Length: 147
Image (cartoon, rainbow, N blue to C red; front, top):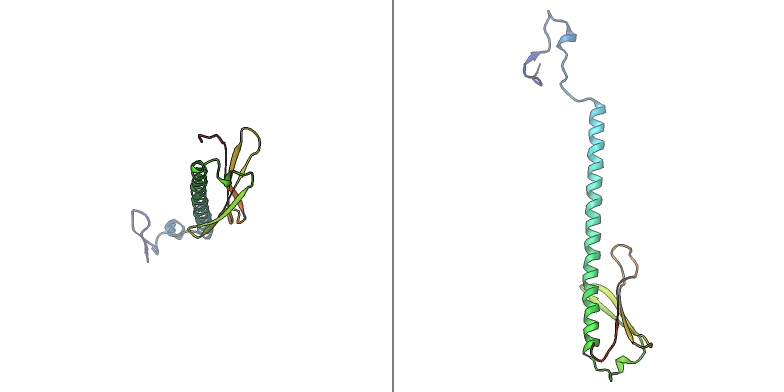
């Protein structure tokens, strides 16, 4: 058998040359293989964690985008409503909305002090990161006859 790992091809069995001088490194030791497997495993675990984190962050960003849209829709609805409308009573309101299969709760309340304020809050019923109801966004603005 001939080992061809180096530039030269060396026969493994020559009768006139001592065996110790013919010995060449033609493979990996068990320690080297285990160390390489360990490094590869650590790298793959890190990549898997990054994929998981990216998916959860993407879901949270999608929820935040929907919540921002819902809050601006409510603010525009309040802006278009006249001050004689019963919605401007000091009673808080709540709506449950389903957008893209996810459930959101939108609440609003009016302050009784002068100047009056309107606070709108959007919650996600199940947050992608925490798996519980979470406040996503809150906005408070002053109310005037010309919003």
